[in-house]
Image 1 (cartoon, rainbow, N blue to C red):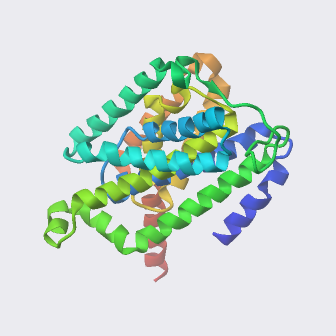
Image 2: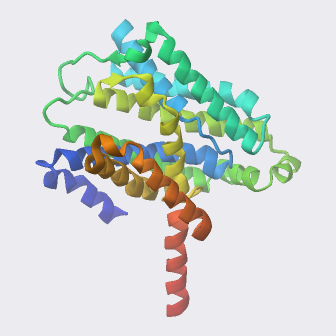
Image 3: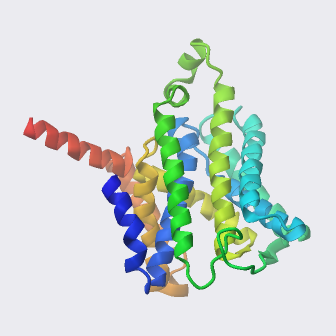
Length: 315
């Protein structure tokens, strides 16, 4: 891990004249962070959501509106966006956690699609035309960098490292064990005195908050948001696919999923241009079918099985 982090810290030097690859690395870091957020709820707590694009969009819209209406610094907007997304996660979770299985999945989908339709028709937040963030003096304080995009790389890497450390700690904490107990047998966990509703809401709040912070970073990175870029249902699906492909319920899963899926999306967009719209989703679906049939525990499970096999042979 130390060697990998060292490589990532010096990688921008090799990508200084390759803006496409530099941007792709920023997107990988961002999507891995979003995958971590989804993984807390879907991987550890076992509550499969296809509506996390709602929280991403809420974070982006909250920080953008605070900047446009009140002139608030984007770092305060990031805290507010994460808090708004976490609060929305609790409000969504209170009724939706009464449902189980595919009913819960459908409920999250309906809520996310309803939010998309609402924001697309709401003129106060720009409607379908979206919102443009004003260009300000570049620097860390304003979280804007115009000529040199390398700072975005390091900010995204730092955010991913912080969230990865949080998930690593959570996996080994009492809270993480309770979430996995709820995932495996909710009634057994209830019989031990744990409240499934309370811990699911805590997982939802933490999950939504992380995704909301990612939405704020995205808004500052592109300086433009609209419902189609931050609230689309396809985006919610991608957030879920990343940890599922990489290995739900593992620390490495979201990072592995992002490393595989983001380049597929970026290079297919360049290769097929407008004629290959959504071809990346077809590839995603094919990969998910392969994983479901041959490796249900994802790429992380594949690497773990190979490591165990080598240990068995050498032992």
